[in-house]
Length: 624
View (cartoon, one colour):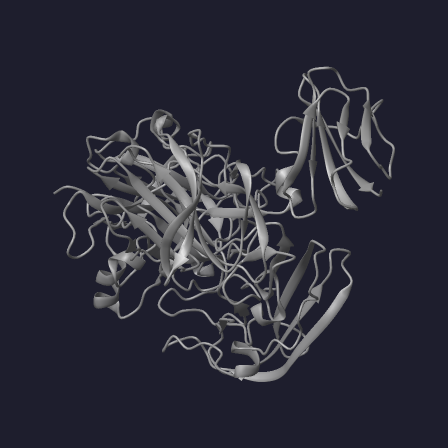
């Protein structure tokens, strides 16, 4: 049985096999976050983690951090609370394991720090419980997230026996997909509880660990292989005086999903493009009550400016939240589940970052676990549009036997602006295969909702590059392009090799992704958002290349200028470039001077770069 490429090779109905959208697993994962320093002595009961307090590497206060497991939000299907730990085929260095193959190989390990159980016995009824979920999602293939483990893959739980320094496997589950679990148990997340038995584990050096076995895609093209066989873990709890036969009553009210954007479509947008009509009317918040009976909850959110000052507060008051079990119910009160958005961010051209802080708690005093009671969203108004949240869950690309492949992404502008650059996140690929594929950035007009006439195309081909985890490559356009209304931004690929682009599965804008491998455009059927961000205006134009400094001995004068500007400190091979405030290049030259006598009065940005690559950027005024 040949293993799938994560979900499938997607072939649109009515098209031949030469035209495919391909969704791939990643070859790089979020393992590079430095862990917090943890305690060096054994932990004591209770042990609890719902993975809501950190992202990246698991908290070193509770876990050993070299095992390769990662912590993220939005990765699983409605977890018990926000944030899950994931075990897969990527190690602590963020890369596929060196021995990864189509055969079964050891994947990640999530290992607890030592826990002191000395003085306890079986009579103390010490129970370890947890929830697990295989990756791969459920339902339609094109909307699934992650990769389901095959039947020969597995998730295992071991206890440490210090008397002979041995790990004892106490529980395991073969690979399975979510749909099969739902058919078998009626629910997605599965609850497991194990009672510690005998005398082997009641000492000062007890520990437990989760580990998985994985297997790579069977393919003759190594670049299409990647991370696979996901298992998600949440709500791990070890304590005494518990009963394994029943789910404990956690007095815990919590968020389930990450905080959402306050914009209707975008995660971020240029400050000068933002309009109050871009605000959502209501937010969607998923709130759970893990107690056995209804609890009164209080929900609020606040909007803070970049100085931390509160601009607006919403108070949803107190509402009763039903228990999550046994029916999988969430908070349904509109005041909490779909709070109104009465605030609007100010319109204008000033860039800024706002933080939206959401809090939920039980009653007045709060519940037992507070880390999952707060989620935050950074609302960015900068110089770029973003549909994606900045983190790739998959790789996206096109396969074809045709000589050209085209990919176009729709963006809707509220006012005329200057497109000056394109940010793209390229996934790491096997032996850097991405970097050998040429492409030309291309911009199309809007033709009744599809890409129309080409209004810009690079003369010189570009090359993809992996710039770092969740780090975008910025490609400055050869010439700024004045655009308005709806435009499509993407690239014309001069061959049919595969380019692997980051794909965010938490935000679905498939209706804005188009591709062409023959003579007609096709709309994507894959649920998600390409990690491509068009950049506008002067901020995206200047300072892209070179080492930017504060000026040092350089001086640009006079300011205001009438006929000519001079750059003291510039060498003869250096360049001076002038941009208007929409990012359009209006004048340029070599050496230490530049004529401005033909330019209209106004404010401009001047970019000076010497032959050593040192750059300064200054604002000047031209006044005749």
